[in-house]
Image (cartoon, rainbow, N blue to C red; front, side, top):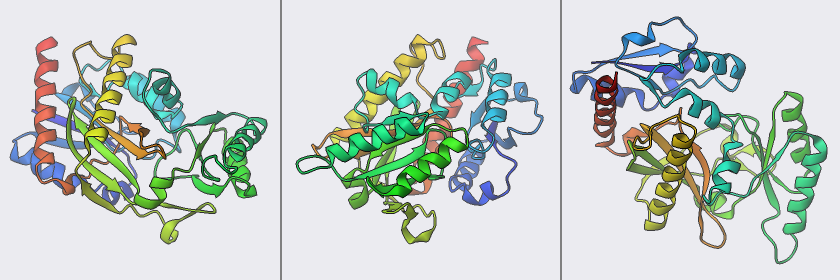
Length: 313
């Protein structure tokens, strides 16, 4: 069996991909040939039993090209996860669709103009008055990774509007969310799902400092293993079910086929609700080193999917 992992031609990704050594050991142990291929280079994608998009982490800077590449391979039944779903998930405006479908999400406003930015910041300032919510916001683009152009600010800090203006000036759409107190205190929980079942979970320590800076002055993820609570498990599987329903409705997947993988990042709202911060469905780190059995679980999910695809072809 031959499997391709889609990555980039940026050599720094090799160093940043914390899962790569675990993937390579687990696939070798399972006697599956694993190759890393950049989405930017010519490849015979049809030659693989499964093509798994894993680390195309330069897509925020090359979004138009990456979307064009997705369109060029969307015919592949072996592509995981499906190209149309990835195009949808690439822009975080998908959160509005999940929220509309009943998934508890972090309250999010979207802005394509400074006028809309001012309205969202003003509304958040009203809510932050006595008896309301936190007086801080997070500003970021809808297409981003690794906290690029992302900042946490006091709601009345002019730097929040300045970052929004920068994002708009680059042709992006702005997201504005209230800063969730539990994130600053404890971080966020990421629940990793393989083939429709929870594999393991992690806690990602806080990254953003107030004022638009990163804690410690640089982007550093402090990750520890987590045992998700029943509420976090329930919130994750509710999001998994809604995503699967959307994918089936849009004919990206069949009704009984789960996504090969996904990471669902959750935060605790002030009222105790576990809310979805982000559903990463095409390029998340799995942090396999936090659970020694997780690499083998992913290999088996890949094997099952490759066999299922081959039987349908």
